[in-house]
Amino acid sequence: MSVARNLRRALVDGDRQILGTFVIVPRVEVVEAAAAGGFDLVVLDCEHGPFGVEALPPLIAAAHGAGIAAVVRVARNDEPNIGAALDAGADGVLVPHVSSRQEAEDVVRASRFQPHGERSVHLWVRASGYGLEESYVTTADDRTAVIAMIEGIEARERLPEILPTAGIDAFFVGPMDLAASLGLAHTPYAPEVIEAARDIVQRSAEAGKATAIFAPTPEHAALWLSAGVKLVVLSVDTQLIRTSFTAAVAAATCPAPDPNPVATP
Ligand code: 3PY
Ligand code: MG
Picture 1 (cartoon, rainbow, N blue to C red):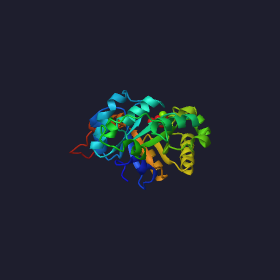
Picture 2 (cartoon, rainbow, N blue to C red):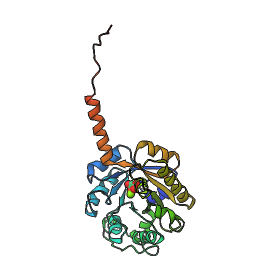
Picture 3 (cartoon, rainbow, N blue to C red):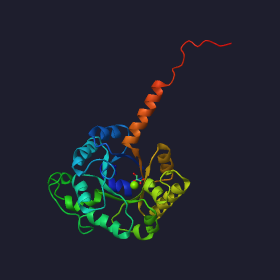
Picture 4 (cartoon, protein in one colour):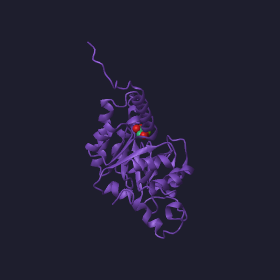
């Protein structure tokens, strides 16, 4: 099953690894450029991006128009944020800072329709084709990826109770916040952080969940892809734009080679 057609199945049953990127600049052009660049999905980031759920419909439409999937990282673990993102047509939700069994169950309750959860029903939203999809309430859960973030030592300690939560498709490691909770916010690439992230990935896989992680650089993405992580979200639009700017300025201003070099004695 392709990522764009059914993200949940691609994540849970698919044999292909998935590469995405975070979007905090809420522009259709950024989403389309991410698709043109070859990413399989974008994560529209309402936790750290300067936008709310009202910005989502054109961004999700742009992703789908470009043939990729759109996941929304909600601002927080609550029913209004999760429900609005899914009603807007997101292929999945990424819920930050899930640190207990209760919080994991809250994610499921807000994301899944009855009988698996208590997601509030609205039949005429963007996600249901404005009412055209008659089976919407019974079929939506099958294609909706529900992904919980594990990004702190408290969550790591509680993994045995969190990981078996039914209705969560994947656990996503947040290495930046994980580093901060280990007292290593300024060295997020430290071996201790990588080791803790690797442990969470491994235990998620052993619990039968799809694995997912944020990779701040292409080198980290390659590391996690070669370790078999199913979904790797590489960098964020602002970082990719800024580093391209830096590289372009450096390339333009470094001394040009002398076209007529004169041998010096
Ligand atoms: C983290 O690494 O903490 C994240 O939330 C990734 O964006
Ligand atoms: Mg985080």
